[in-house]
Image 1: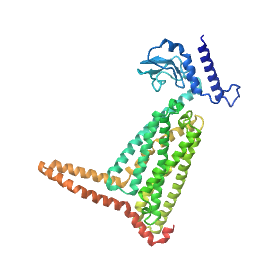
Image 2: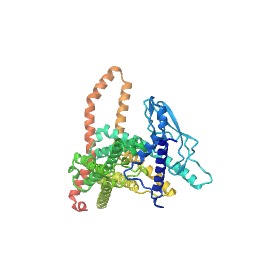
Image 3: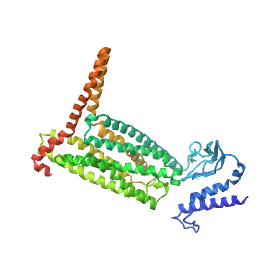
Length: 474
């Protein structure tokens, strides 16, 4: 055996023994210890290259894909444009595989490897019908796949609903007011967050996490930023309702740009602080834990503000509900003054606990693979992935103003189609001119009506409250 094979074999043995020491460190202490500055992945790649020196020499002069280590298999150098077959790993993450089957990895014509090898095609876990542990692991793997599918479906459905809601808020200009503009921005944050989630599914993988590539870190940073903006815009929702219900003409005190600063700009320094800390203290593994998929403890830099915002919002909504109850008790026969306020508050009162519970579940991770762990996986996947759908339904699809505006648009379109169908070409031309001339007037009237709808209840309620200071003090 040549010298390089001895060295490669020695490196592989050292790496295997060091991995065993890492996994069994709680049981025994081994005298074998590698220097702290040794890059384990680079050693594996070096051993992989040295093991294939003879193949390099044989393929000298041809375009090849260099030997590479994908954290599972050492892929030998191969001529460009070939599909390479290698035996499946004997064991991976505690699961034994059939090594008589082969995994595949494509070497492209330009001499580069495919980003991922195909282990799913033939590499199947060995299932021993007499071993309860093997059966349990097989079922656990199936539950993980089902939870992943639920996540994908939920995020896709949510993104579809969110886009529809975003288009409706943008297209129906006659319902524009501060409250609906806040809804619009909240929907936008969930759209951007869902898009970043799908990007992360492609960008963040075993290879990019180990390489700590910049695009992987950018994807994680953007996802965390839009995640934080979700809760700050929920805080804006609560703040606006508090100003509308608790203070006379209170919504005029805070301008729209101030709400935008709270929702979009305040999270920026929070995320930048997290980025700086991660860059200086834990600039590795794409700023996530590659083994568990959970975030670093430094993530409490932005988890903390989110928790504070959630708690403040719960306090605000509690105060709003208390004020509305006192108003109803003081004026049981004048429900119309608080009817619209109750409808506006009800949506936020329902949605905020839902988002809060979902966020708090992020910190809970049951151990083991029992029924509680399986239930948590499915429940958390459902809530996390369908959040955008809940927001769309509560703030847009069940919004009476949106429903009425859509119905008016449909009725107008039907009337135009009916008139065009029953008229002659000359009448159609006259109808087109008349429609174009009157369209701006109709839109202006609808905008005025919608604006009054957005604020009429607040004005009536505030005027009445100004005459009754006892209620306002509550």
